[in-house]
Length: 223
Image (cartoon, rainbow, N blue to C red; front, top):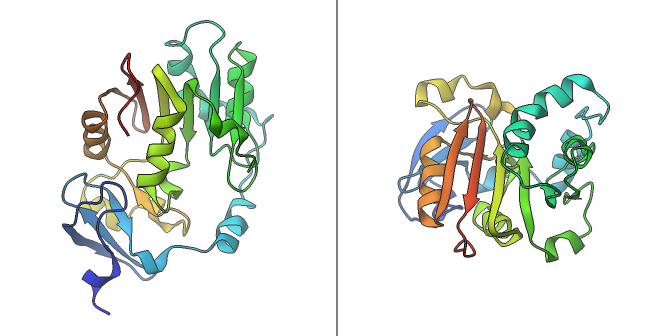
């Protein structure tokens, strides 16, 4: 099978023109020519057992002060933009939902969802004033579906707060530690988030190197 046959269009925007971007010892990567998403070849996606084994090694203790300090990079700018007593959802909360606890402590009741560690789908049947997705979007196997899911969770005027490392140049990508994690399969750049914001009529702010705050307009965002 040739390299170009290992993908069937962009998994985020479905654009057909995706070019080979990089190959390392483990897998090949492609880049969409429309939204600029970089993604692994579809035959390199890890199975659920492999994913769970990697996630079980993460040490995301809710009482870990260092972890809380890390999450402040997204929590503080989001809290500054929320109305009092906002309701939210931490999507992809992982084994230690520290961010949900931090936001709840500030008066913003925050539910949790994670396909492995909090798989109850009930929270996905509502809309929220804000949704957080920290160090999770890079794990999305089918980012088009999961992105639309995130949009449906946000009420009109609501916020989407994302934390993920961003793709730089191809030269930087070649030596990028972030791609060494076998569960990291979808890599976003500033261009990707600008594309999504334009397509779905969202405002977009880049906070530091790896935090994106997006707000839907008064009407529901297009999905």
